[in-house]
Length: 162
Ligand code: PNS
Image 1 (cartoon, rainbow, N blue to C red):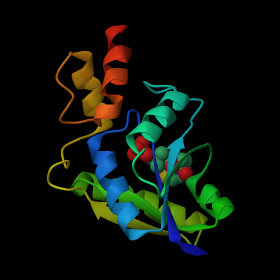
Image 2: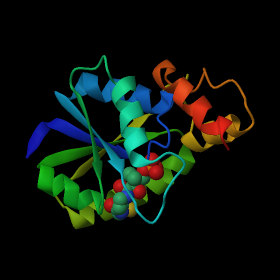
Image 3: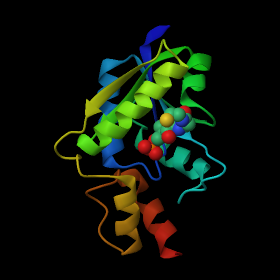
Image 4: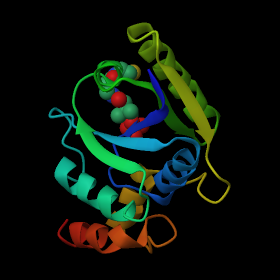
């Protein structure tokens, strides 16, 4: 197992400054961070997966040790296939901790070699969620405190047509 590489999985619908906080910090710990965007054909989401990947690639453009991929199916299976032994997840508070602990345990049952590393959200980004960004965008609020500047125009454009 390769411990110098981690997987940071999520929906990233869309990428937020909260995600970027976790990506940057994981990139300071591991040689390589693989950011995995879940492609769930049964749950379309707000942005198509290709668009989410494109936005993440632009937001992470300055981070040389970050790779962006999409995946379908089980996270535990993906980590086996990619020979990755650490999954990183951001935790904003006790609600996240509860649900993330359940997910970490299930993933470890499916892949006993897998560790989940929780990173507490930084104080500046601890209140940000993709669902909150989508809601604020639908009301035309200023999104600049919540999303990377590289993707702000994409989000505004997407919600202009809704
Ligand atoms: O950003 P999110 O929506 O909190 O990320 C959740 C995600 C995508 C990491 C998680 O739902 C996932 O990887 N699902 C894939 C299916 C899976 O492995 N399920 C078992 C773990 S409960």
